[in-house]
Length: 211
Image (cartoon, rainbow, N blue to C red; front, side, top):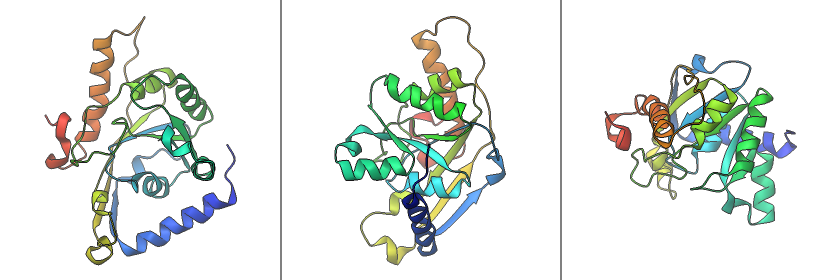
């Protein structure tokens, strides 16, 4: 995947934006410096993808909802930033192939398994696509809990200077599965991934995966 000039311009813009907020990244050393990485995070704001893409320390590719690609200019922009479209709420085989290809190339793939921003701020029930990616790629999974970005709405945040926290967990892999996965097994594995994310969040953000 090529990285056009405006990728670096946008990255510089995000770094400038960081000057206006308070943020902290915990355990950045949990991000492997090279090789394929599947980053799994909760999703609170439109700011999450560019922030994670900058703060993780590695160039990342993202799944983005198909609706963003309806307009050519926007589609070209998000594609240049490393995003590719996905049909939410269904098994998108094309997006799955692109995900596996990115990991085969040793890239960092960021996935938000909830499929959309959480309006309540709490973790929602995740789609199982992330589990299929993890099983078929064998890539290490790095869970990330992010909070505070839900405050980045309108312009009032400029006066509040919200505190953004990015908590990075230790890499792990899923156990190998022999034969065809049952729906129950797929759900169980997806839950296990999301519990890793929930463990990195304050209790009030854990929602569906609070234990």
